[in-house]
Image 1 (tube, rainbow, N blue to C red):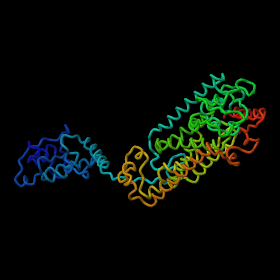
Image 2: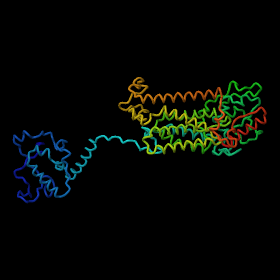
Image 3: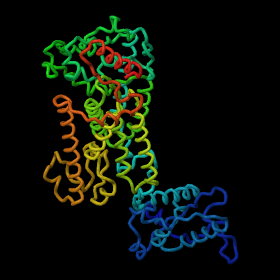
Image 4: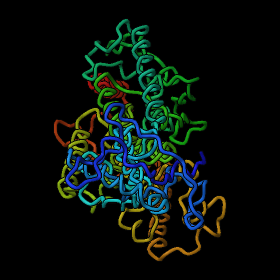
Length: 540
């Protein structure tokens, strides 16, 4: 039979089928056999001319979307409903084919079980809801960011923190090297003689020999280069404070290592302006990867693998690397200018204080998006104050902490995106991931490196004001960094009150660690021994 005859059957003169009573009050009609449940076979008849004129195209089938609209899907819920449906089906068979084509329910698709039709009806509805569902408006971030979470737009990135993992691996490997070197030179993996290192790590002389920040190895130092008598320095393998021990008679070059430094003249013509002078400048960088002991590296790595990791995932590896390294270097430069000249300094604390500064900026940038911004601010300030107070204890270089924090604030303003409220105001909400990967969202300005002129076109006044602030912060921190380097290598000026930022004026703590060498050899040696005894006692 023709396809249109099959899907649009005409009533048979001998219809209804067996079991149906045409009289009133008879049995409910059924279009299926009571035994097999299959639809009956109908006799194909040729439609008349009028019907043929109105007949739909033979290529239209009940499977076409317009034939079975979603609104005609029915799911019987009781036996009475099924009987009523069967009765309507019978009468529909007697109507013109075009009317049947637009009212045929999904359950009457030929050769399809009735249960499967109902299931597909539900699935079709779900599919239509999914396909034609209107886009949902993004929910506001207000009140969604809690304490310990980063709130800057784009901070939920799932990028891998390569810098944190790489630096952590290097720092742990270097610390293992410190332990091994201390064990091979002194006979013990940690310092136990002449005193115990409370950080549970190597002696400070090993740390100096491995690259700790030690001012006499970096430039001319008052009391060293202008000394008229020979100064004997502790050897890296020393375990005693006895001035007569051979391990207390090394040269400055042997203590500093890395190929040595120019030795002071130690004669009547010696001056502070000796040339050439020590210049191991890398001691501003290498100490970031050195640590004074197991406790020291443990706390730093815990902070680095939590706050540092989340921050790198938020802002990207390049930004994080710049802030981390710059904060660490700036902290050691500031400590070299104002800390005691006879104390070695190590650790990633300055770099991590730069990361802490970024968390403070994140809090301020996402202030309106936080659940309790005032509470979060108080907790962060409390953490910062406690960290700075601990830096006042003997043996800790608080200037590295302060310098790292200041650099983190200044550089964070430069490299972080604008505050959330400002970005919404100027219509700039591109996540960090899009910027880092080189992709731009639709309607975003072009990259500065691809189109420098187009980058500045159409910018709002608020955008210009914020970029002026960024430029000012970058210029300020650069000028301060240059001034500190000049003061360290050329002017060597200091202030009388600066030392109280890194010590408490009790038990002569603020005077311990400075190389104050007199012309008398006995007094000179006593001062040196006092300095290195302090270093040995506190492991720095």
